[in-house]
Length: 207
Image (cartoon, rainbow, N blue to C red):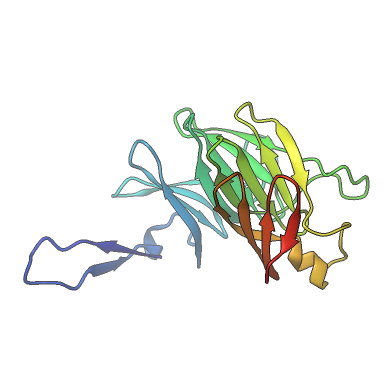
């Protein structure tokens, strides 16, 4: 992992990069996501846990098989801090976590799919907060789940007609990667295969 440090000397225009990878407690080969919280700490999601960086050292948080309050997976894919200061953690194969950065208490947040064979979301790929303070959760092959300010799921949006089989075109179409909010409660959703335009009344592919 690399971090850029701004150079204060005007005559030196090139930024200086320092490799922080060696400093990670349980060394990880990749950094998937990063956010800066309200206290100024940097949180980094990796393939081997979650790390908090204070500018000098790292503190790591990991999945522990015998501890239900630990992360549900070490593969951290996305991070988001909500208006209450809680950090939402989307993982690969472990679903969602809700982490309090002040108390360092973690809660595993299950998103139920309604499918008896695969009842909960396993992989969360992206998290977005819209203008109405609603969280949009993009999942692998399970579409979109909207969560209100009370942390309740209020809507499930499938971008395809039915739950797709693995590694098919519809599987990738139902796997949101990014959200872009437009006017009049419209949303553009990029997926692993194509772009979708959502309005209040309908959804349709644009590319």
